[in-house]
Image (cartoon, rainbow, N blue to C red; front, side, top):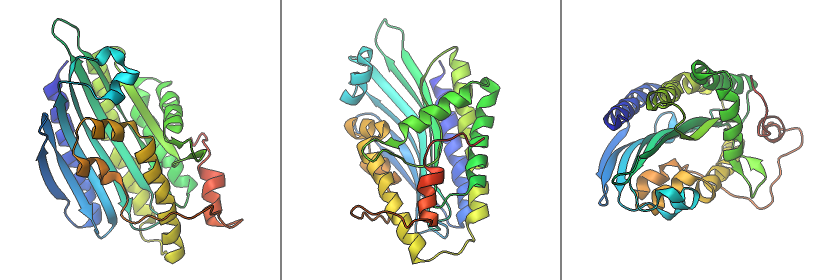
Length: 298
């Protein structure tokens, strides 16, 4: 188990992704380095009111603790009484243009240790796409990129992680998917450490190839207040998922994480309406009928 190698990879991944996104937007990302009183710290890279991104963040964190948060020990009682480390890169990007989808990507590593005991470790991560106006070409391309990241590790991995993503990014209280999915995995420790680390790296390295071509195809499409209003309404679903269901948000808040960095995923402009329904036959309705239901895009 090579913890320094994982940290070095994650710091470099953040740098590479931010550099690519700054080229897309034309404005620099703010850099905010922070320390956590309980142990560890991180680097937050954020853009607000950019030329292209209305808000976006690419965060690296490496936090440590002596006592596991309650949200972790509920599912993994064997972690109780162990000191722990968690590190990862997590990003959420909210373009201003409603025809450009929001995207989320995360790769992470966790280890819990106790004297004279074998360490408990695993990797996790994935990426998922949340369009406001659906394009089949974009959905297929995104899922193909996810597929390509996992193919070297077995032909059965993508279908498993795709189905896991469909289950995870689902708003149970709405009976509705957050977006068109992608891939999601957690508790990855099967086989060697090197194998699991390599798979996680492949996912992280594939992000720019999965997302940047989509926004380049859509960024010049004209839009008006109708599209912006629908975007703000659908962003409300994003907020609901992150605050009600997302395990990473809960772990971060319960472990005394940095709130500004944890909640950087929330969009800057959001609306809720009472019992709203899209107009029949509209592009907004098509998102619900043709894109949000889980399907095999490739």
